[in-house]
Amino acid sequence: MMTNQTIDRDAWVTLAAVAQLLHHAAVRAWAQAEAEGPRSHLHLLGLGIHTASCQAVAMLPADADLEGQPPAQDDVAQLLRSAEELIRSIPVLDQTAGISPLVVAIGDLVRETTP
Image (cartoon, rainbow, N blue to C red; front, side):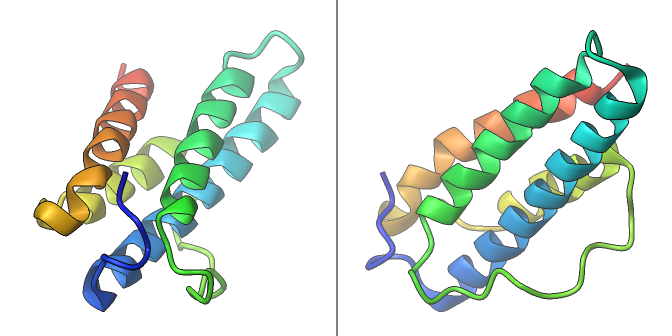
């Protein structure tokens, strides 16, 4: 697993942006699930997105800035695609090799939201 002592600043700034996108996507999925009712598939999707967000946050330094403006888009699928695009911009080197499972998880979430 990638540790926050080995990740460089550019990578963790990008990873923090990914975490923010994922957090917002989870919140949006849960809001939509609430509107659809208890049998909505979006409850589980929101949980999966939240789990990915937590994985991203766990790789960040403790002082990483996770605040900021929420993303302009509200579409869960678009938020996930944006997160996937960002995380794929982080080069997989020895010090960032632990990011690979998160890349896969986000890719799986994108596929779940693609009709």
